[in-house]
Length: 162
Image 1 (cartoon, rainbow, N blue to C red):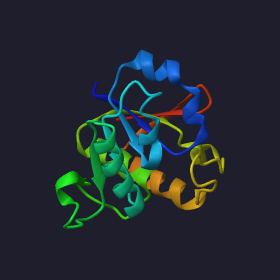
Image 2 (cartoon, helix red, strand yellow):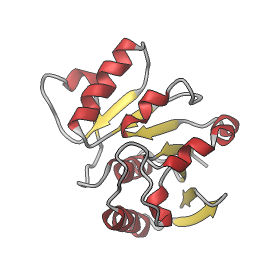
Image 3 (spheres, one colour):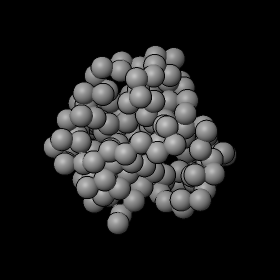
Image 4 (tube, rainbow, N blue to C red):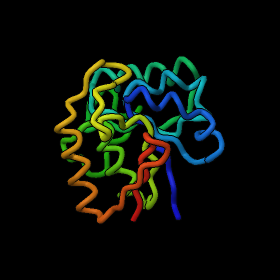
């Protein structure tokens, strides 16, 4: 099974350091979570649909001599050499775009941490709010399209698998 961990913006993702270390899997992060590189075992990829996050992730990567891939939704000519484009951008939020990207890259078991709005929580670490209805609908579409099953582990880790 090809497994990966994806960290969303929810506060609950900060509760699982042991899980992140013990699983020893690739870790993808959404939006500004790249700033947590000192407390995460590693960061393999940063995905965002926000221009300001893209610019910060590029700058932060260079300043801290980090080696993560960055994904964004479209081409900005002056920055293009510093990031890649989502394989099939759906017009969704950063977290759901990362889930879709993982599936397109062949991952068949996804551990989602910090996807708190799937539990109905409005508990976003960086913005203080989440448009829960849209996010949940985007996840529903992705799960149905890919025939994924969902299990909730430890109350706030979502496991999607084929």
